Image 1 (cartoon, rainbow, N blue to C red):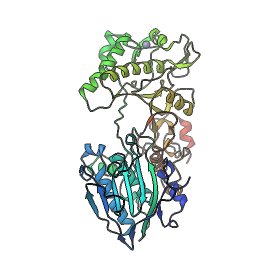
Image 2: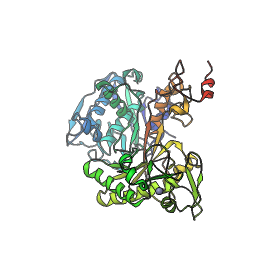
Image 3: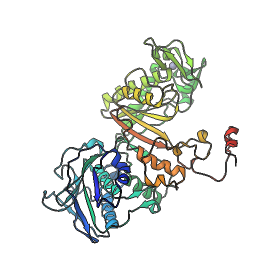
Length: 507
Ligand SMILES: [Zn+2]
């Protein structure tokens, strides 16, 4: 792949180093043959001013927490000024202007594509455009978030890195007195519904919160859309309701149990619809309601559910997870057939009353297997990378869910205690085989494995791995990395029963 945006002179950083960068790898392209280079600083002096084209005065306001979700403007612009200054030793001025003055006025211009009189980027996907023209560097975003991503894409390519929260992990490239850039390209995240990481950055104090916020913004981690998927009883109360209505609950091995709702019982479906509508009535700002199942196993196999799944013979593939073959010859999971049917029923009611709102559901555990039918357009499915109780490979699972759902996400795990038992190198976060790009810091192998895992996640959350599978995608990562992923000097058995795992650690 050829480089699309680069700083000059070319010799200081190899092309390979630049291409290794996250943004260089990912970005779909719009390349002009010869983008003119622009000198930003010479002999330690700024040659141009940073002009923020901000007719509404929106970008330059210091945002509060709520506004930050919509507009990370000012802190990003402050960083542009700060890091261009650190790299070149120059003092860059920032000026606010109401309008873009046209092609013949030199400067760095930051604003939306509309304000910079540009076109071609997609606002729904947080895209940005970096372009050099005669004497000008344009940093345009389709929206405010796109502007921020454009700023950090530029700084990333100039060599800035923010590996982890806090100053210690900030890397500023070696200073150079002349700073010159050239290029023309469009970029944006592939996972644009949300990109979310829980890196476990200490206790929640004002300082850690601020550092985390800053680190996420600088790495273009964002949640423009509130993905809210949680284990839910969809309006049932397992304690209060079980006595009077055992038929609302799962039939497991011939007995009703309050392990799960029966997802086919018409009264349960009606309750779930009422629950979802009440959710949006109570919280009009909310963008999603979850119908994901309560955690654990024990899904229903009652006659209603079998009828819904169109299966008569059921086979336990382990842990009471039942599969069968429907009259079309498809292998189906009874849990998937019933819970995704309920998701569709709820989604239709939500779409009728609250257009634009979504129903969220995991593809997890006994319902990891794709349903045999299409999902409503307002159903968002998040496929978990673990607890995949399906005979399909990950690739097959994603492909099939992509054929059923119009919005798809990934839920990845740093680690789960029972998977790795804190053995060095066993946690998912430490497995680098999926590739994080070849960031120079990773190749030096100086980092604890879990930290490398976090960097990997930063890269993966921008990657185009689901491009062919869904119209809309998101990604989040769970579990703090200190649970088992960091190299430790001692073993904490914590009641484990897997003696083989303990002895495998040896000394
Ligand atoms: Zn049932």
